[in-house]
Length: 629
Image (cartoon, rainbow, N blue to C red):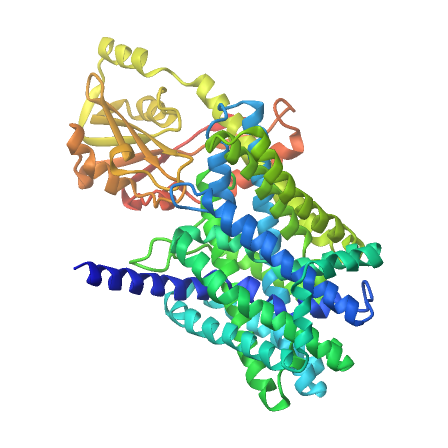
């Protein structure tokens, strides 16, 4: 029996490892396409391809992969899971758990989290553009006359990629693992073939060469960090996808296969550069013999599409988490799989990313130029991750200030060095992710602040439940058969929709359910904590439904289970009443007028709550009024 269990466990681990290879490592796995090419690019920071410089740069790449990816993310950050889930939103929820609601500390943590999400979106716009563009640029090596077709082909590939998102990733996902297995195997084989021409290139594994590089040319080496960081882009995906595959399979694939394949390829490129100066034009494609170029271009394009797919689906996942935590307005969410909860499609996010990505390709025209815009968002996200992790280490894990300070300071020294080097790229295009980040940050912060102010305003005007029920007892209203469910964010107050119903219809249903839906700072809630029912006098009930920020809301499904706590609801006799308010902006109290107007636009554009909570449309009644804000 033990042997069978071990075989089953090993088989499951292997399946998860292969799936993780196809989804998690796409971004970092396509970095060899453009990293060394950008390092030696003459357009931003020309570097002579001497043996000392090549050894120094390879040493920097090696130890960036080891220190940032292997130690920071794999060993430490991935231990900071929120009930098994990872990612910037999970880390934000974990870090803010011990901060009092409304406190300055909690607001600072929330600001960090919002900024981290903004950096993720900015990175999500650039990654598909530079990845696919760099793969298609291999045509220039195979057939220089095809140069003018690079951008059009890239745009066609990107449009097709975004267009098929609504179909779901289940079918394509089945091919992700095997393709990436072939891709990383190809990276390793090409690297070994070229290392064989000059085995001494492996001396660059010694970190001393990185120190020599900085000692001999400190300013040049510092500027090079802005390109070296491209080798570690995608490290955050290892943490973000931890909940899908588990910590162990990701670690197993990284140390056992991906890291060796990447290092072999980078060192192979280094050997190719020293052996043939022409390889500087595109070191990756010069690794392959001419007969293999077109197959390699096809494989590279498939790999970059997979890397882009992971970023896009990651954007959907982060957007849903941000939506349920109250950072962005409600959006339409389409589920593309009946069996897998996490496979979703968000049209607004998808088409917004597509337009931004294609504009970046058209504007910059080449991966060399686009690399100037790449890096600031990634390194900014790394800094925010380190800061949030510091809070988790000290307040959740109860590490001492000294232990936390030493480790996080080491992380921040590396993060800030790479971030500072990328600041040098601002005039050449680095301002674009900063601009994107500022715009998204302003919108998210305005929405979060506006919701808080509006909720406080409405809560202040709410009538408390107990005196309202007493007034019903004093002046009874006509009762009609059935159940009325009134949704409200304030579990202690009477919903405005209920007051409007009484004012205009002058009746009450036989059963009145005052329902509040809460999204907690956990990814998922258990069955026991999901539903709370409180019986009140005169046929009133107070129901609270708790969801985690990654749970799939479904109110009718939850309400059916109310019978276990004394409330029996019949779906065909239940109506849902929702408040539909119209905002009238005025004054500057709480928030400037221009931000209030932005909030009002976002408020009007928000998707109806019927879709988010899976309410039956034919049983929903909307009652609203104007609210001065």
